[in-house]
Amino acid sequence: MSLFLVNRYLGEDEDNCASKESRAQALLVKLQQKAKEKQQQSLRQEETEEQTDRKKRKADKDSRQKHKKRKGEIDPNKDQPVEEDKNKKSGKKKQKRKKELDGREDMGEGEEEEKEDAEAGNDTREKTSAPAEFTVLGGFDLKSVQKVHRVLPQWLAQPDAIHSDIKNHLVPVLDVPGLCVHLVKKLQNNQIQHLFPVQAEVIPVILEGAQQGLLIGQGGYKPPDICVSAPTGSGKTLAFVLPVIQVLMERVVCEVRALAVLPTKELAQQVWKVFSSYAEGTTLKVVMLAGHKSFSAEQESVSEHRGGVRRSLADIIVATPGRLVDHINKSSGLCLEHLRFLIIDEADRMIDSMHQSWLSQVVKAVYRTGSETEPTSVFRRTEPKHITAASLSPPAMPLQKLLFSATLTQNPEKLQQLGLHQPRLFSSAHSRPATTADTPTAPPHKQDRFDFPQGLTEYYVHCTLSKKPLLVLHFLLRMKLSPMLCFTNSREAAHRLFLLLQLFGGVQVAEFSSRLSPAERKKTLKEFEQGKIQMLVSTDAAARGIDIHGVKCVLNYDAPQYIRTYIHRIGRTARAGKAGLAFTFLLGVQEKHFLQMVMEAGSPGIHKQIIKAESLKGMEERYQQTLRELQEVIREEKAQ
Ligand SMILES: Nc1ncnc2c1ncn2[C@@H]1O[C@H](COP(=O)(O)OP(=O)(O)OP(=O)(O)O)[C@@H](O)[C@H]1O
Image (cartoon, rainbow, N blue to C red):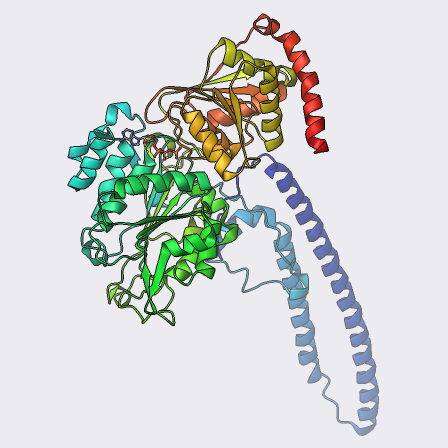
């Protein structure tokens, strides 16, 4: 029935539908021939059966007549009409069946008519469908399916636009509606006189959602969940730190009311520092659960038990997902039943790594009924279902999710895992095609598009594998592109490059990967930021979110495979509206795909940087010597 005709989004592959069509056609013809043969066979069978019946009846009749003649009682017509009718009927039935099949035979002509009927819901064929044994199951009548493009939900397709041009859209701190004096002072003490576009847009909305206090949102409704997609280095951290601190700073009883979840220890540490800095001067307590301290030390920092009563020692928790789940499951002292803000930074990465199902564990802990030791709190909440009059009373403190990322996915299937409530998207204008159910669909992008930092200039260098280390030395020693953050695609490649550059001499380099302990990584980042290290050779552990002041240049020593990795790597420079350079070494085979990927993602343009062979000449000999020494060092390391 056309009522349930669903055009499905069949993805981008258009090229093989022609073969699909021919295959379906061939199958259709084959099935029709089979049905026809079957029908003719059953017709022949029926005819033979009728002939035998007729002969049988005739013989019976003759014998009866002979018998009755002997008795004189026969009416030769009485039985005849019935039998004739019967014959006639079966003949008619036969004709009808043949006609239907024939009708089916020239279904190609009548198909459109049939299809229109079916679509108009006047399909009579089903009522007079051919005998079951002749119905071709599946009815391979080819329908031309209308090509549909993915249409985004309204909130995704038409976001609140954020200017990506930071410099020309600064907003004086004093002009931001609702920002309290304490925070204005803190910003000014940190030499921040203006807010960036993402901060000026998002902060007032979050403050608005808590204007009626913590218990209910505006107008008694739950505040909308907020999703923010803005370039790297555009100030997303303060966009959630400031409003959360302002909303919570008037609290009376200390309870965990804000939880920020980040993918790595370094990022958690970085955000914890910002929260702690702006919470100074308030009674708010910020606690980090990211494995920087022992598990028991973290438990003691979250709550204490006095006289059998649990008392929270944290208002704001900054955590990594794994450590958070451990505390939810093993620390009775961690109570999330008062949680008001759930902040998910680097949200696309956090969605991808939902394998720990950390979010469902958080939601379960938030809506947990009063635990044994805890009398059921007046604020006890049940997980929100559909909005009804009943569900709005009694007013329950809303849990508002705040998502932030420079590469937030547009994929509704992925976002729906987060269970967002009437979400509102803030996005740099450039990155969203306006496609909704009622606007013409923009040509589907093969991938999401993003905003690149305004001050960033991108280059690529065509090179060979053996020349890469020499090019790095040229960048450092001749082009003076330091401090430089150099990314490799593996821990081993980072270590080898670090050793080679160290052996070559004349350059201060350090490596940053999981080969180092968290303490060593922390020390290395600090020295790099202090300018004691010219180049940090890193894996993608330092790609996301890490905010290192003054990185002049990012080098993709190994070209990243995925666009999100590229964007987060090059986003370590050109932050806060400053200028920055990004170089990517490309082998011949990588060039076409990589450049296409970057352009499709919305890059303003990537330029070819030519390095003349003679610029590397002077280092050739020393370089060959270094390679020999490197082999020795690696052999010794392996032996250890
Ligand atoms: N209003 C402002 N004025 C000046 N500097 C600011 C302002 N807001 C943030 N910054 C600085 O800009 C830098 C980048 O901020 P932040 O780390 O929040 O960016 P981000 O958008 O989170 O980046 P990423 O996407 O890489 O995580 C930080 O050093 C921060 O101190």
